[in-house]
Structures are given as structure tokens and as C-alpha cells.
Length: 433
Image (cartoon, rainbow, N blue to C red; front, side, top):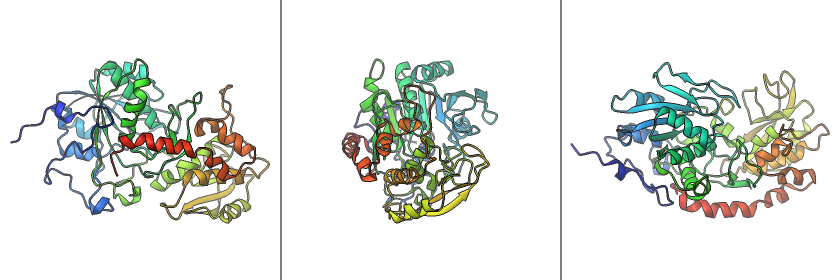
């Protein structure tokens, strides 16, 4: 019987060079049983959680573990990682920390589950939604943890809140002297980087730090970027002891549909990988008085309002935007904007994911919607930053350029240099080529 490696040998530093290779190489016999479906070079795609589980969670033995997760933290057999960990007598799971929508996923957008005792595992589940680093640190101390495990499926966009839950958890772990483990998962929309950079003064729960809108990184890669670029500037500075358990067999060119992995909705309004593909751009419509499809079966793919008509789809299709078509569509939201009213608009259909450009497409959609007199930007309760679109886009620039009648090319060209700079900055933190 081979002796288990020491924890120190398994843990890498949080610098740019950290965890450049999978941590649990193991043997063929130890690997999860999977079928190769669209992985890189024909290999099966194996998320970090399955890699760690196949190794018996050995890097967590002897540790006091807290888990930040939600319903997406599943193994390939669809069981949850927390259930897998809790079933092992040699592991000490001190608590679970639920983000927006909650650990078990029972809450809607902007909501969370209050602290409760999980009936399946008996573990205490703490409400971590909206918690900053200091509050998260208090929750970690209350639970008595010394190691934090993060396992949540992200969708690759700055205004999706889970990455900021991860950031606060990293800060908190650093500040209490705990280590931080990311069980990595594929980015469902790939490596493409696009969209504006968040500007100083526009930080919020939908964008905390200056990264671009479509960051093109996995949560593991993003954790490395946070640790190398942002945590040293946070509070008293310094990095967290960071470990990333990498995905095996995945290429950023592989779409979520091609991985063969089960898709668990990371939130109620991202029911499919197609939703995630569209959301990277059509999330902008949350900042308008148009429905973004909440309350329908196709959120972020249905876009419309009672004041639109069939000309909207005609004008969008006439633009011949790459990799996308627009079907004239009508829908009645069961909740959220225009609840119970018939909305005219479009169903966004991605015809070629490799050519589709989510952010420029959404800018073009906004420009065409602004032809209608009843179009309006959604107001926020924040008197200093009164437009929600400014928080989503990271500054007033998008709104002001569209209000001034600037073309899609001019608007998207305004952030081209920001994208190039971000691509250079992120390069050293990437794990998958």
C-alpha cells in the first residue's frame, strides 16, 4: 500500500505558477468510470470534484472543512459533493455555506436560504449570500473551519454573482489563516474574452473588481487570477494558500453540450447551457424595461416587451450578426417584468457557437430596441448610480454611447484595448490550453 502524500506536497502556492498540473494524477483504476464524450483528444471530461472523489478526498483528511457550494456541486453520478464528503467517517465537514439561491437551490434571484440544518447530512448550512470578506470570515470562525472547498458551476460572466462569493471567501480564508481549495469545472462558454472592464466607482454585487465582462476563465483559473492580482491589494494584503483540482480532458474549445457532463441549473433562470451562452450578452436586458425572459421557459433567450413588434426580429436578422438568428416570438411572463402581459420580441437562436459574439450581439439588440419610443433604462434605487445597466456593464459608457446614437462597432470598439490588456494579464493564470 503506497503511503498517502503529505498535505504540503498536495497544496500549491497561490502564485501564478500554482497548480499547473492535475493534483490527483492517480492511476487508471482510480479514475472515475466515464465515457468519452467530446473531450479534448477524445478523452472524457472529468471535473475536479470527480478527480478529488476518486482519490478518496485525501487532501481533506485531518482538516476541518467548510464547503461553499450549491446544487451544481455534483459528481458525474449526480450525487452532491457534500453528500459524498459527509458519508466518509474520516472527513470532518464543519459546515456548508450557501450563495445566492441557496445551497440546495430553493431561492429565486436576489434571494438566499436562511441558516438551517440540512436534513440529508445533518450539517449546518450558513447563509453566505451578500457576505463580504469580514462577514464571511465570521461565518468561517463560527463553523470552526481551517480549509474551505469551493465547488460551484460558473457561467463565465462578471455579473454572475458566484465568482464574487468565491472572492469574498478567498479573502476570508486568507484572513483567518485557512487554505482554499477550488474543485474546478469547465467554463460553459469557453475561452473568449469580451466586453467592458469594470471601472472604479461601479463595484456592486454584480461586479466587484475590475475584470472584463466575459472573462473566459474557469473558476479555478479565476481564483488564481484573484490570488495573484487582486487579493494582495485587499485589506492588509497577502495571498491565500490556494489549491485548484483541475478538470481532466477539457479544452476551452469544448462547448458545455459536448462535454457529456450533466447540466445542473446554476440558478433558476439558467436552465440550460444555451441559456448561459446567451446570458453573457442578453443579461444586459436586466438593465432595461424589456423582459429578459424571466418567468418563461427560455430566460435570456426570449427578449421582448408589450411595445415591441415583428419589425424587431426583421431588423436584427437584417444585420446578419455572426452565429445567431432571431425568431419572431411572443410570450407571457409568469413573474418579473410584464408579468401576465403578452410580450412581442425575439427568441435568440445561436446557430454557430464558434462564431457567436454574445456581447456585440446584445449591443446590437439594445440599439434596435431603442428605436421604440417606450424603451427605457431600468432605474436603480442608488441615487449616485441610478441606472442598473451601468452596474452590469461596469460604467456609464455603454449607456451614454447608445444614448448618443453610436454604432455597435463604435461601442464595442471602445473596450477593445481593455480586452487585450486583460487577456495579457490573465495569461499566466490559465490552466487549460
